[in-house]
Image 1 (cartoon, one colour):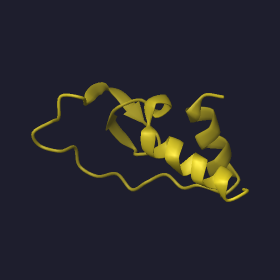
Image 2 (spheres, rainbow, N blue to C red):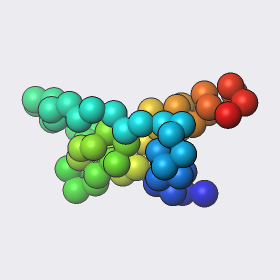
Image 3 (cartoon, helix red, strand yellow):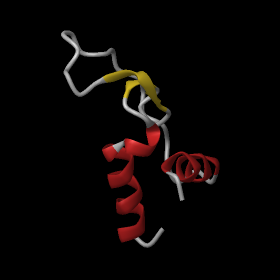
Length: 66
């Protein structure tokens, strides 16, 4: 399942919340892709489906038996 679908499902069920957006770091790191948007972080930098923080949050839910 794509992470964007998992995020929407988990948010709707109340198991997960999107993070509060933080400003983009200055200077912008090389790995940032300002053309991609992450719905979990609510900012540019990478796509939701490539978000490591979201993967870890979902894995923690799985490990906790949610």
